[in-house]
Length: 224
Image (tube, rainbow, N blue to C red):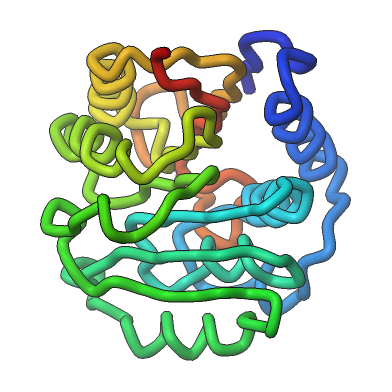
């Protein structure tokens, strides 16, 4: 785990660092059902994103790649948040029904939830509102990750939290880095978590792990 930047740079950097510290200490509010939900995310990550959303004023969460809903449910459970999920359920047996059932168990009167069933490249991001927390867990080629930054950028605040899954893989890291450079985004603070060092997928993964296949979690700022 590598933390880069000053945690006291601004409110968002402090909130991210605190959410991580709490997750590492197993300090969270998630139910056993959400922590154990089948999904491509680790338990500590689920606690981190739940803690983060709870702490962010006016939390607005955008997610590309939802599968069975473990990350979306972790973001919304017990929190006040507006959330949009984008997925076409074209991979991994397409469990849209399981996603909807899992989400239904976590939505409350404090959650404004919606989803878009479409390839993320076919979404008009000028029409979906603005978000300050963004997770990309779509397809994982370098070009996918480049597009996963550049296309939704119009829907993201000037300063926002950015999360990428599967950080163990070199292509994920390369595509993301190229996109951040091309967009002129400044990384104010970042956390890199790799659960292997040879580019392989983690043996302990999904809900049976802490950090699944690695994460990059950052506070980014658009150019002025």
